[in-house]
Length: 127
Image (cartoon, rainbow, N blue to C red; front, top):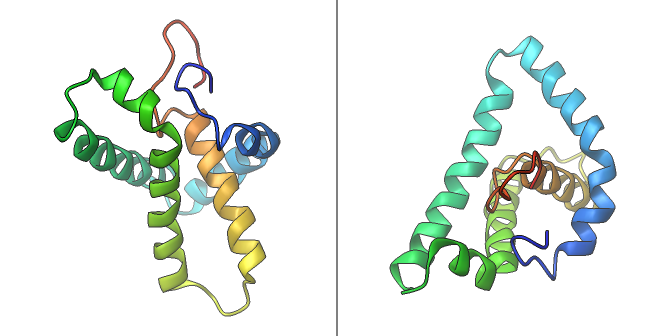
């Protein structure tokens, strides 16, 4: 969190990181029934992150990490909005907006912890 200079999402990540193991178990269970689904989900999030970062780098003369640190919360927010749009286009009518909001934050925090959003700190296992 500090390495990437996350501010707005700092407390959300701290709060929802408690669901890391639950998210990991759910993704692993999904992967057992549909091999490769966990990797596809995380790769898709990483691709969206890389596209957003690439756009920022095109319009910046700063280094990669400086650009990330200057835009960390905006990057997370853009990834969140992309995922929200995908969910809302395919959502089951039985899901409430609150369930979508919470589920989305859980997967965002999981992806952040797996270093699929923002950069991995040097010499540390988790982002």
